[in-house]
Image (cartoon, rainbow, N blue to C red; front, side, top):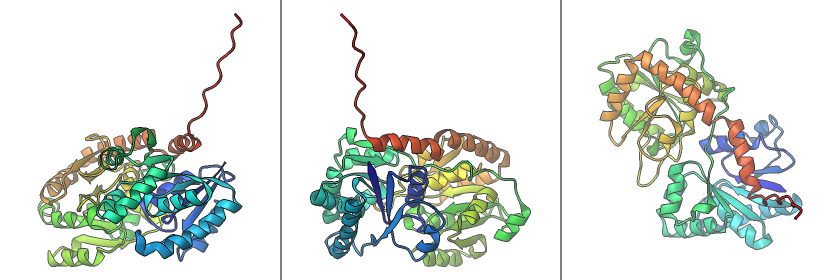
Length: 391
């Protein structure tokens, strides 16, 4: 059977879901899996660096609803040709919208079956619009199986979208534990990063409101009273960058906030390994939540204690309180208190980091997760026939 993953978010585009797909599908048999990935200006260089069967398709739409109809039609035509020429029998849709809706159309056109990944945040976005909600329900209803990235996302599907429990399967994102590894403190690397001997709190993620970068910036004023040298390093880019820089300047904290932008894999790894504490201060913004938080898993793989907001599926990434803690991040006060407490206790952070490394190796290594995925993709298998016993 030939499977076709359809995903607008796929490397070299950055994003947790794109990383998830890359790590899983690059470990699957090349002959059985094909990838229709979204277009990106850097795609040619990236696609020369691997041997996956990747076809670039214009999957980025101006809108997920009726206003994006022209984009849907263009993408479906390209996918239909792929399905026919490659004899695809099963589509894997990166999201219910827009990829799942494309698959639903293809199911009507040529009978191809599909499954859908659900990450959590896109479902809340779809629920904010009657039109998008209706389209998402149609896409979910047509899927043979739905893969939820966390128990929280599974709960959303069951309680908010009326999906039957038997159709929802849990598959966590993971981490390459042979690459994301702890490393000793390196003064030379820290100097290159501009960190020196300062205590560094790191956040990795797109600059979006739900990630809570602004709450961590607001918390710095209180943290500075006990940790005067604190530096908040932010890896990632996005629509909130200007407002975050303005906030840091207005609060007189520009010298304590570092915007590193998007980094390559090696640069990102160095940040994880050399930071003192990893924080993802996520929160719920009108239903926009953090579905899982793969960056928290990556940080723990590198032996770092982690802190996350008490919303979405982030608590599932850690063993509370042994490897990390969650705290409400709708305001900065509780966050500041917890971060200051952890920065003042290096022995506790070290114990949490060691426990976090063990936790991730046991539960989130990509090799084990890929085996789970392969079983799921094969679908239910017929029961073996029983032995015939002579009478």
